Length: 517
Image (cartoon, rainbow, N blue to C red):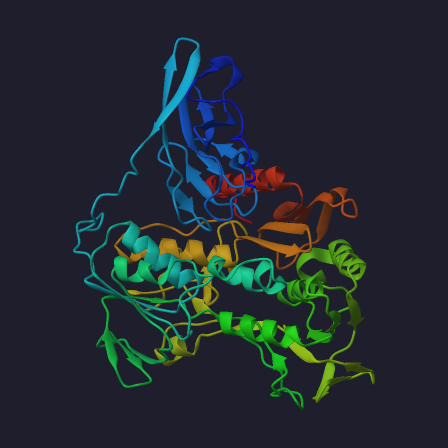
Protein backbone atom coordinates (compact mmCIF):
# COMPACT_ATOMS: atom_id res chain seq x y z
CA UNK A 1 0.00 0.00 0.00
CA UNK A 2 1.54 3.29 -1.08
CA UNK A 3 1.32 6.50 0.92
CA UNK A 4 0.34 9.56 -1.10
CA UNK A 5 2.85 12.38 -0.94
CA UNK A 6 1.76 15.77 0.37
CA UNK A 7 0.34 18.05 -2.31
CA UNK A 8 2.62 20.91 -3.37
CA UNK A 9 1.96 24.15 -1.46
CA UNK A 10 0.00 27.18 -2.60
CA UNK A 11 -1.36 28.05 -6.02
CA UNK A 12 -0.12 26.60 -9.30
CA UNK A 13 2.16 29.38 -10.48
CA UNK A 14 2.46 27.89 -13.96
CA UNK A 15 -1.26 28.62 -14.38
CA UNK A 16 -0.76 32.14 -13.11
CA UNK A 17 -1.94 34.22 -10.16
CA UNK A 18 -3.45 37.72 -10.08
CA UNK A 19 -0.82 40.44 -9.67
CA UNK A 20 -2.93 41.98 -6.90
CA UNK A 21 -2.40 38.83 -4.80
CA UNK A 22 1.28 39.70 -4.40
CA UNK A 23 1.74 43.09 -2.75
CA UNK A 24 4.91 45.13 -3.20
CA UNK A 25 7.83 44.00 -0.94
CA UNK A 26 5.98 40.78 -0.17
CA UNK A 27 6.57 37.07 -0.75
CA UNK A 28 4.32 34.04 -1.14
CA UNK A 29 4.71 30.33 -1.83
CA UNK A 30 3.23 28.44 -4.72
CA UNK A 31 4.35 25.57 -6.89
CA UNK A 32 5.40 24.65 -10.40
CA UNK A 33 4.71 20.96 -10.88
CA UNK A 34 5.80 19.38 -7.61
CA UNK A 35 8.41 22.06 -6.86
CA UNK A 36 7.67 24.59 -4.10
CA UNK A 37 8.53 28.08 -5.37
CA UNK A 38 8.92 31.35 -3.48
CA UNK A 39 7.73 34.33 -5.50
CA UNK A 40 8.58 37.90 -4.45
CA UNK A 41 7.73 41.37 -5.71
CA UNK A 42 9.86 44.48 -5.50
CA UNK A 43 8.32 47.39 -7.33
CA UNK A 44 7.83 46.32 -10.92
CA UNK A 45 10.28 43.42 -10.61
CA UNK A 46 9.23 39.86 -9.86
CA UNK A 47 11.47 37.05 -8.62
CA UNK A 48 10.95 33.31 -8.19
CA UNK A 49 13.34 30.98 -6.37
CA UNK A 50 13.26 27.72 -4.43
CA UNK A 51 11.08 27.99 -1.35
CA UNK A 52 13.30 26.18 1.17
CA UNK A 53 16.66 27.26 2.57
CA UNK A 54 19.43 24.99 1.28
CA UNK A 55 20.97 24.77 4.78
CA UNK A 56 18.33 22.99 6.91
CA UNK A 57 15.22 23.45 4.75
CA UNK A 58 13.59 26.36 6.57
CA UNK A 59 10.60 27.96 4.79
CA UNK A 60 11.98 31.18 3.34
CA UNK A 61 8.52 32.72 3.17
CA UNK A 62 8.77 33.04 6.97
CA UNK A 63 12.04 34.94 6.59
CA UNK A 64 12.83 38.53 5.72
CA UNK A 65 12.85 40.11 2.28
CA UNK A 66 15.49 42.83 2.24
CA UNK A 67 15.94 44.53 -1.10
CA UNK A 68 16.78 41.86 -3.65
CA UNK A 69 17.61 39.29 -0.98
CA UNK A 70 15.76 36.90 1.29
CA UNK A 71 17.08 35.84 4.70
CA UNK A 72 16.39 32.49 6.32
CA UNK A 73 14.31 32.70 9.52
CA UNK A 74 16.14 29.88 11.31
CA UNK A 75 19.88 30.45 10.87
CA UNK A 76 20.16 33.72 8.92
CA UNK A 77 21.46 32.46 5.60
CA UNK A 78 20.95 35.01 2.82
CA UNK A 79 20.10 34.43 -0.85
CA UNK A 80 19.85 36.59 -3.94
CA UNK A 81 16.28 36.70 -5.22
CA UNK A 82 17.62 37.60 -8.66
CA UNK A 83 20.07 34.71 -9.11
CA UNK A 84 19.36 32.30 -6.24
CA UNK A 85 23.02 32.53 -5.15
CA UNK A 86 23.79 31.74 -1.51
CA UNK A 87 25.26 35.07 -0.43
CA UNK A 88 25.91 34.26 3.22
CA UNK A 89 26.61 31.16 5.25
CA UNK A 90 25.44 28.89 6.73
CA UNK A 91 23.81 28.07 3.38
CA UNK A 92 26.40 27.25 0.73
CA UNK A 93 24.25 25.86 -2.10
CA UNK A 94 22.16 28.16 -4.33
CA UNK A 95 18.40 28.15 -4.68
CA UNK A 96 16.80 27.10 -7.93
CA UNK A 97 15.80 30.18 -9.92
CA UNK A 98 12.69 30.43 -12.13
CA UNK A 99 11.50 32.52 -15.06
CA UNK A 100 8.70 34.95 -14.15
CA UNK A 101 6.44 36.64 -16.70
CA UNK A 102 3.73 39.22 -16.30
CA UNK A 103 0.86 39.08 -18.75
CA UNK A 104 -1.65 41.80 -18.13
CA UNK A 105 -2.80 41.52 -14.56
CA UNK A 106 -1.46 38.00 -14.01
CA UNK A 107 1.92 36.53 -13.03
CA UNK A 108 3.22 33.25 -14.46
CA UNK A 109 6.20 31.18 -13.33
CA UNK A 110 7.51 28.58 -15.74
CA UNK A 111 10.95 27.18 -16.57
CA UNK A 112 13.95 27.08 -14.26
CA UNK A 113 16.87 29.30 -15.18
CA UNK A 114 20.35 27.91 -15.56
CA UNK A 115 22.60 28.72 -12.62
CA UNK A 116 24.83 31.65 -13.46
CA UNK A 117 28.50 30.92 -12.87
CA UNK A 118 30.83 33.75 -11.84
CA UNK A 119 33.45 34.86 -14.31
CA UNK A 120 36.74 32.99 -14.17
CA UNK A 121 39.05 34.87 -11.84
CA UNK A 122 42.53 35.30 -13.21
CA UNK A 123 43.38 38.75 -11.93
CA UNK A 124 42.51 40.83 -8.89
CA UNK A 125 40.45 43.97 -8.92
CA UNK A 126 43.67 46.01 -8.93
CA UNK A 127 45.23 44.13 -11.81
CA UNK A 128 47.65 41.93 -9.88
CA UNK A 129 48.17 38.30 -10.78
CA UNK A 130 46.23 35.81 -8.71
CA UNK A 131 48.15 33.57 -6.33
CA UNK A 132 49.09 30.22 -7.83
CA UNK A 133 49.11 28.34 -4.50
CA UNK A 134 46.79 28.77 -1.50
CA UNK A 135 47.14 26.64 1.63
CA UNK A 136 44.43 26.42 4.28
CA UNK A 137 45.39 25.09 7.72
CA UNK A 138 42.26 23.71 9.36
CA UNK A 139 39.33 21.50 8.38
CA UNK A 140 36.53 23.23 10.26
CA UNK A 141 33.90 25.80 9.32
CA UNK A 142 36.23 28.62 8.28
CA UNK A 143 38.63 26.43 6.33
CA UNK A 144 35.89 24.61 4.44
CA UNK A 145 33.95 27.79 3.65
CA UNK A 146 37.12 29.40 2.30
CA UNK A 147 37.94 26.43 0.06
CA UNK A 148 34.38 26.20 -1.22
CA UNK A 149 34.28 29.95 -1.92
CA UNK A 150 37.59 29.90 -3.79
CA UNK A 151 36.30 27.25 -6.16
CA UNK A 152 32.87 28.87 -6.43
CA UNK A 153 34.71 32.00 -7.56
CA UNK A 154 36.36 29.77 -10.17
CA UNK A 155 39.88 30.36 -8.99
CA UNK A 156 41.93 27.58 -10.60
CA UNK A 157 45.18 27.62 -8.66
CA UNK A 158 46.56 24.86 -6.44
CA UNK A 159 44.48 24.54 -3.27
CA UNK A 160 45.73 22.45 -0.34
CA UNK A 161 43.67 21.98 2.82
CA UNK A 162 45.55 20.54 5.81
CA UNK A 163 43.29 19.15 8.53
CA UNK A 164 44.29 17.54 11.81
CA UNK A 165 40.91 15.77 11.91
CA UNK A 166 40.41 12.21 10.69
CA UNK A 167 37.17 13.02 8.84
CA UNK A 168 36.35 15.51 6.07
CA UNK A 169 34.70 18.76 7.24
CA UNK A 170 31.47 18.10 9.13
CA UNK A 171 28.43 20.05 10.29
CA UNK A 172 29.80 20.57 13.79
CA UNK A 173 26.67 22.20 15.35
CA UNK A 174 24.79 18.96 14.66
CA UNK A 175 27.29 16.92 16.70
CA UNK A 176 25.82 18.19 19.97
CA UNK A 177 22.23 18.52 18.75
CA UNK A 178 20.16 16.18 16.55
CA UNK A 179 22.98 13.81 15.65
CA UNK A 180 23.95 13.21 19.26
CA UNK A 181 20.28 12.84 20.16
CA UNK A 182 19.90 10.10 17.53
CA UNK A 183 17.55 12.15 15.34
CA UNK A 184 19.89 12.90 12.42
CA UNK A 185 21.29 10.29 10.02
CA UNK A 186 25.00 9.93 9.34
CA UNK A 187 24.71 11.39 5.85
CA UNK A 188 23.60 14.73 7.30
CA UNK A 189 26.95 15.26 8.97
CA UNK A 190 29.47 15.74 6.17
CA UNK A 191 29.33 19.24 4.69
CA UNK A 192 30.04 17.73 1.28
CA UNK A 193 30.61 14.17 0.06
CA UNK A 194 34.22 13.09 -0.38
CA UNK A 195 33.80 13.32 -4.15
CA UNK A 196 33.36 17.10 -3.81
CA UNK A 197 37.02 17.57 -3.01
CA UNK A 198 38.21 15.55 -5.98
CA UNK A 199 35.74 17.14 -8.38
CA UNK A 200 36.78 20.63 -7.27
CA UNK A 201 40.50 19.89 -7.20
CA UNK A 202 40.79 20.53 -3.46
CA UNK A 203 43.77 18.63 -2.09
CA UNK A 204 42.27 17.70 1.29
CA UNK A 205 44.83 16.00 3.53
CA UNK A 206 43.46 14.54 6.77
CA UNK A 207 45.34 13.77 10.00
CA UNK A 208 48.04 16.26 9.07
CA UNK A 209 49.67 18.13 11.92
CA UNK A 210 51.34 21.41 10.98
CA UNK A 211 54.29 22.23 13.23
CA UNK A 212 55.69 25.40 11.71
CA UNK A 213 55.15 28.21 9.22
CA UNK A 214 58.29 29.46 7.53
CA UNK A 215 57.30 33.00 6.66
CA UNK A 216 60.53 33.81 4.81
CA UNK A 217 60.32 30.91 2.37
CA UNK A 218 56.50 30.79 2.40
CA UNK A 219 56.28 27.14 3.37
CA UNK A 220 54.17 25.17 5.81
CA UNK A 221 56.06 22.42 7.64
CA UNK A 222 54.26 19.22 8.66
CA UNK A 223 55.15 16.89 11.51
CA UNK A 224 56.29 14.37 8.91
CA UNK A 225 58.86 16.87 7.67
CA UNK A 226 57.00 17.53 4.44
CA UNK A 227 56.95 21.16 3.27
CA UNK A 228 54.00 22.69 1.45
CA UNK A 229 54.63 25.99 -0.38
CA UNK A 230 52.06 28.79 -0.49
CA UNK A 231 51.50 32.21 -2.03
CA UNK A 232 48.61 32.95 0.34
CA UNK A 233 47.93 31.18 3.61
CA UNK A 234 44.77 30.94 5.72
CA UNK A 235 45.05 30.05 9.39
CA UNK A 236 41.77 28.39 10.37
CA UNK A 237 43.02 26.16 13.16
CA UNK A 238 39.95 26.71 15.32
CA UNK A 239 39.78 25.94 19.00
CA UNK A 240 40.40 22.91 21.15
CA UNK A 241 38.39 21.81 24.19
CA UNK A 242 39.78 22.73 27.57
CA UNK A 243 40.78 19.46 29.22
CA UNK A 244 40.22 18.49 32.82
CA UNK A 245 43.27 18.43 35.07
CA UNK A 246 41.67 16.67 38.02
CA UNK A 247 42.54 13.12 39.15
CA UNK A 248 40.88 10.54 36.91
CA UNK A 249 40.45 12.93 33.98
CA UNK A 250 42.09 10.56 31.49
CA UNK A 251 39.84 7.57 32.14
CA UNK A 252 38.24 5.84 29.13
CA UNK A 253 34.77 6.95 30.27
CA UNK A 254 35.67 10.68 30.16
CA UNK A 255 35.11 12.55 26.91
CA UNK A 256 34.94 16.00 25.34
CA UNK A 257 32.89 16.93 22.28
CA UNK A 258 34.51 18.72 19.36
CA UNK A 259 34.92 16.28 16.49
CA UNK A 260 32.87 13.60 14.76
CA UNK A 261 35.08 11.02 16.49
CA UNK A 262 34.15 12.55 19.86
CA UNK A 263 30.45 12.38 19.01
CA UNK A 264 30.77 8.74 17.93
CA UNK A 265 32.52 7.97 21.20
CA UNK A 266 29.79 9.56 23.32
CA UNK A 267 27.07 7.77 21.37
CA UNK A 268 28.86 4.45 21.95
CA UNK A 269 29.19 5.18 25.68
CA UNK A 270 25.52 6.16 25.88
CA UNK A 271 24.42 2.87 24.33
CA UNK A 272 25.19 0.92 27.53
CA UNK A 273 24.91 3.70 30.12
CA UNK A 274 22.23 4.77 32.56
CA UNK A 275 23.77 7.87 34.14
CA UNK A 276 26.00 10.61 32.76
CA UNK A 277 27.58 13.64 34.40
CA UNK A 278 28.13 16.71 32.22
CA UNK A 279 30.75 19.10 33.54
CA UNK A 280 29.95 22.65 32.44
CA UNK A 281 26.69 24.51 31.82
CA UNK A 282 27.85 26.16 28.61
CA UNK A 283 25.92 25.98 25.34
CA UNK A 284 27.78 22.84 24.35
CA UNK A 285 27.31 21.28 27.79
CA UNK A 286 23.58 21.89 27.89
CA UNK A 287 23.04 20.81 24.29
CA UNK A 288 24.80 17.56 25.20
CA UNK A 289 22.57 17.26 28.26
CA UNK A 290 19.43 17.72 26.14
CA UNK A 291 20.61 15.21 23.53
CA UNK A 292 21.43 12.58 26.14
CA UNK A 293 18.06 13.08 27.82
CA UNK A 294 16.55 12.28 24.40
CA UNK A 295 18.39 8.94 24.73
CA UNK A 296 16.67 8.43 28.12
CA UNK A 297 19.82 8.77 30.22
CA UNK A 298 19.83 10.24 33.71
CA UNK A 299 21.77 13.49 33.29
CA UNK A 300 23.49 15.54 35.99
CA UNK A 301 25.09 18.91 35.15
CA UNK A 302 27.85 20.28 37.38
CA UNK A 303 28.98 23.89 36.96
CA UNK A 304 30.57 26.62 39.11
CA UNK A 305 28.12 29.39 38.22
CA UNK A 306 24.81 29.95 39.97
CA UNK A 307 22.86 30.23 36.70
CA UNK A 308 23.59 28.45 33.43
CA UNK A 309 24.70 30.77 30.62
CA UNK A 310 24.16 33.90 32.71
CA UNK A 311 27.43 35.42 31.46
CA UNK A 312 26.17 35.35 27.84
CA UNK A 313 22.38 35.64 28.18
CA UNK A 314 21.79 37.31 31.54
CA UNK A 315 20.00 36.23 34.69
CA UNK A 316 16.45 36.06 33.34
CA UNK A 317 17.31 33.88 30.38
CA UNK A 318 19.65 31.81 32.53
CA UNK A 319 16.80 31.02 34.93
CA UNK A 320 14.58 30.06 32.00
CA UNK A 321 17.20 27.72 30.54
CA UNK A 322 17.65 26.01 33.89
CA UNK A 323 13.90 25.56 34.32
CA UNK A 324 13.54 24.23 30.79
CA UNK A 325 16.18 21.57 31.36
CA UNK A 326 14.76 20.65 34.77
CA UNK A 327 11.35 20.16 33.15
CA UNK A 328 13.04 17.56 30.96
CA UNK A 329 14.64 15.79 33.90
CA UNK A 330 18.14 17.29 34.03
CA UNK A 331 19.53 17.57 37.57
CA UNK A 332 21.76 20.58 38.25
CA UNK A 333 24.59 20.90 40.75
CA UNK A 334 25.47 24.57 40.46
CA UNK A 335 28.04 26.46 42.46
CA UNK A 336 30.19 23.34 42.44
CA UNK A 337 32.94 21.65 40.41
CA UNK A 338 34.36 18.17 40.04
CA UNK A 339 37.36 17.47 42.28
CA UNK A 340 38.08 13.97 40.95
CA UNK A 341 36.70 11.15 38.81
CA UNK A 342 37.03 7.84 40.58
CA UNK A 343 35.98 5.04 38.24
CA UNK A 344 32.23 5.39 37.87
CA UNK A 345 31.91 8.19 40.42
CA UNK A 346 32.40 11.95 40.19
CA UNK A 347 33.57 13.47 43.46
CA UNK A 348 32.49 17.10 43.86
CA UNK A 349 34.50 19.80 45.57
CA UNK A 350 31.68 20.48 48.02
CA UNK A 351 31.73 16.85 49.13
CA UNK A 352 29.00 15.28 47.02
CA UNK A 353 29.46 12.09 45.00
CA UNK A 354 27.60 11.42 41.73
CA UNK A 355 27.39 7.97 40.11
CA UNK A 356 28.41 8.26 36.44
CA UNK A 357 28.72 5.59 33.76
CA UNK A 358 30.55 8.25 31.78
CA UNK A 359 31.45 11.93 31.92
CA UNK A 360 31.37 14.65 29.28
CA UNK A 361 33.47 17.74 29.92
CA UNK A 362 32.19 20.94 28.32
CA UNK A 363 34.25 23.46 30.25
CA UNK A 364 35.20 25.73 27.38
CA UNK A 365 37.67 25.90 24.51
CA UNK A 366 40.96 27.60 23.79
CA UNK A 367 41.99 29.07 20.42
CA UNK A 368 44.79 27.17 18.70
CA UNK A 369 47.24 30.03 18.21
CA UNK A 370 50.56 28.26 18.76
CA UNK A 371 51.40 28.21 15.04
CA UNK A 372 50.83 31.93 14.78
CA UNK A 373 52.94 32.61 17.85
CA UNK A 374 55.81 30.47 16.54
CA UNK A 375 55.71 32.37 13.24
CA UNK A 376 55.85 35.73 15.10
CA UNK A 377 52.36 36.66 13.92
CA UNK A 378 50.81 39.17 16.33
CA UNK A 379 48.42 37.59 18.84
CA UNK A 380 46.30 38.83 21.72
CA UNK A 381 44.00 36.12 23.12
CA UNK A 382 43.64 35.12 19.49
CA UNK A 383 45.27 36.00 16.19
CA UNK A 384 44.93 39.72 15.52
CA UNK A 385 43.63 40.57 12.05
CA UNK A 386 42.59 43.76 10.30
CA UNK A 387 39.19 44.48 8.75
CA UNK A 388 40.18 42.32 5.78
CA UNK A 389 41.14 39.39 8.05
CA UNK A 390 44.83 39.73 7.19
CA UNK A 391 47.32 39.14 10.00
CA UNK A 392 50.42 41.18 10.83
CA UNK A 393 52.27 39.15 8.18
CA UNK A 394 51.22 40.15 4.64
CA UNK A 395 49.71 37.27 2.69
CA UNK A 396 48.69 35.33 5.81
CA UNK A 397 45.04 35.54 6.83
CA UNK A 398 43.12 34.14 9.80
CA UNK A 399 39.46 33.22 10.21
CA UNK A 400 37.17 31.43 12.63
CA UNK A 401 37.63 30.75 16.33
CA UNK A 402 41.21 32.06 16.40
CA UNK A 403 40.60 35.43 14.72
CA UNK A 404 40.28 38.62 16.78
CA UNK A 405 38.99 41.34 14.47
CA UNK A 406 37.85 44.99 14.73
CA UNK A 407 34.07 44.71 15.02
CA UNK A 408 32.51 47.87 13.55
CA UNK A 409 29.25 47.44 15.48
CA UNK A 410 30.65 47.25 19.02
CA UNK A 411 33.79 49.23 18.30
CA UNK A 412 35.81 46.52 20.06
CA UNK A 413 38.33 43.94 18.90
CA UNK A 414 36.42 40.72 19.41
CA UNK A 415 36.86 36.97 18.97
CA UNK A 416 33.74 34.84 18.54
CA UNK A 417 33.52 31.05 18.72
CA UNK A 418 30.45 30.53 16.55
CA UNK A 419 29.91 28.42 13.44
CA UNK A 420 28.21 31.00 11.22
CA UNK A 421 30.83 33.64 12.02
CA UNK A 422 33.61 31.20 11.13
CA UNK A 423 31.99 30.30 7.81
CA UNK A 424 31.40 33.93 6.86
CA UNK A 425 34.96 34.85 7.78
CA UNK A 426 36.25 31.98 5.66
CA UNK A 427 34.27 33.30 2.70
CA UNK A 428 35.56 36.85 3.19
CA UNK A 429 39.15 35.66 3.61
CA UNK A 430 38.85 33.69 0.37
CA UNK A 431 37.90 36.82 -1.57
CA UNK A 432 40.72 38.80 0.01
CA UNK A 433 43.30 36.11 -0.71
CA UNK A 434 42.32 36.59 -4.35
CA UNK A 435 43.17 40.27 -4.03
CA UNK A 436 39.80 41.65 -3.06
CA UNK A 437 39.42 44.38 -0.47
CA UNK A 438 36.30 43.12 1.27
CA UNK A 439 35.86 44.21 4.86
CA UNK A 440 34.46 41.68 7.29
CA UNK A 441 31.59 43.64 8.81
CA UNK A 442 28.96 40.92 9.29
CA UNK A 443 26.99 41.09 12.53
CA UNK A 444 27.79 37.95 14.57
CA UNK A 445 25.00 35.37 14.81
CA UNK A 446 24.56 32.04 16.54
CA UNK A 447 21.78 29.69 17.49
CA UNK A 448 21.39 27.12 20.22
CA UNK A 449 18.76 24.38 20.45
CA UNK A 450 17.40 23.02 23.73
CA UNK A 451 14.75 20.35 23.21
CA UNK A 452 12.14 22.11 21.03
CA UNK A 453 13.25 25.62 22.02
CA UNK A 454 15.64 27.53 19.73
CA UNK A 455 17.57 30.55 20.98
CA UNK A 456 18.76 32.95 18.27
CA UNK A 457 21.35 35.62 19.09
CA UNK A 458 22.65 38.47 16.93
CA UNK A 459 25.36 40.97 17.82
CA UNK A 460 28.00 40.64 20.49
CA UNK A 461 27.76 41.82 24.08
CA UNK A 462 30.66 40.90 26.33
CA UNK A 463 29.18 43.36 28.81
CA UNK A 464 26.00 45.37 29.12
CA UNK A 465 24.34 47.69 31.62
CA UNK A 466 20.68 47.05 30.80
CA UNK A 467 18.49 44.29 29.39
CA UNK A 468 15.14 45.16 27.81
CA UNK A 469 12.74 42.22 27.74
CA UNK A 470 9.93 42.24 25.20
CA UNK A 471 7.33 39.50 25.56
CA UNK A 472 7.47 36.69 28.12
CA UNK A 473 10.50 34.41 28.46
CA UNK A 474 8.47 31.76 30.26
CA UNK A 475 5.91 31.76 27.45
CA UNK A 476 8.75 31.02 25.01
CA UNK A 477 8.01 34.05 22.86
CA UNK A 478 10.37 36.89 23.66
CA UNK A 479 13.09 39.28 22.61
CA UNK A 480 15.91 40.46 24.88
CA UNK A 481 17.98 43.52 23.95
CA UNK A 482 21.34 43.89 25.66
CA UNK A 483 22.29 47.57 25.88
CA UNK A 484 25.48 49.39 26.71
CA UNK A 485 25.27 53.15 27.18
CA UNK A 486 21.86 53.04 25.56
CA UNK A 487 22.99 51.23 22.41
CA UNK A 488 21.71 47.75 21.54
CA UNK A 489 24.80 45.53 21.45
CA UNK A 490 23.05 42.19 20.99
CA UNK A 491 19.61 40.62 20.81
CA UNK A 492 18.47 37.16 21.92
CA UNK A 493 15.08 35.75 21.00
CA UNK A 494 12.88 32.70 21.30
CA UNK A 495 10.36 32.06 18.50
CA UNK A 496 10.68 35.64 17.25
CA UNK A 497 12.57 34.74 14.10
CA UNK A 498 11.40 37.59 11.89
CA UNK A 499 12.04 40.18 14.58
CA UNK A 500 15.52 38.73 15.13
CA UNK A 501 16.26 39.16 11.43
CA UNK A 502 15.06 42.74 11.53
CA UNK A 503 17.39 43.44 14.43
CA UNK A 504 20.28 42.00 12.41
CA UNK A 505 19.49 44.29 9.48
CA UNK A 506 19.21 47.30 11.81
CA UNK A 507 22.67 46.55 13.24
CA UNK A 508 24.12 46.20 9.75
CA UNK A 509 22.66 49.55 8.74
CA UNK A 510 24.00 51.26 11.84
CA UNK A 511 27.47 50.06 10.82
CA UNK A 512 26.94 51.25 7.25
CA UNK A 513 26.04 54.68 8.63
CA UNK A 514 29.17 54.76 10.77
CA UNK A 515 27.30 54.42 14.06
CA UNK A 516 29.95 52.42 15.97
CA UNK A 517 29.93 52.20 19.73
